[in-house]
Length: 178
Image (cartoon, rainbow, N blue to C red; front, side):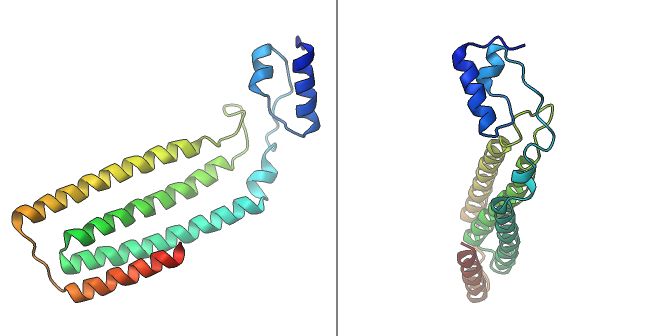
């Protein structure tokens, strides 16, 4: 039963003509009854969209490249013992975690609307941004800890030539990935 005014009725007619299949907040608040959102309402966007596929490939490339860069920087840190190289490796760790979270967010947001999420799962991106911010803060604390420890104990740097070469190579890989 629709108890909508003329303005709300026009809104619903425009929504239906445009092919939009989910209820607007306006119609839900005004008490208009609509049919349920079909399970495959977002299937073309979720599964067949070129944009989604391109995002997924870019995320996989970023994650793979980030893992390589992280491994090289961690090896350079173990080789040199430098707090600066460790801080660079921790920044790379945040990038890898953010890349993994990006892939997970893309997967979740591509899921079709369901009974518990009638408007889809797109808000997972806000959650992933919060987690990434937390990771940045944790990495910053790790950097501060390593820097204070190096200041108190004094640096014990070794094999700086090889470490510099490795960090430069990792930076070049990172630059190629964009």
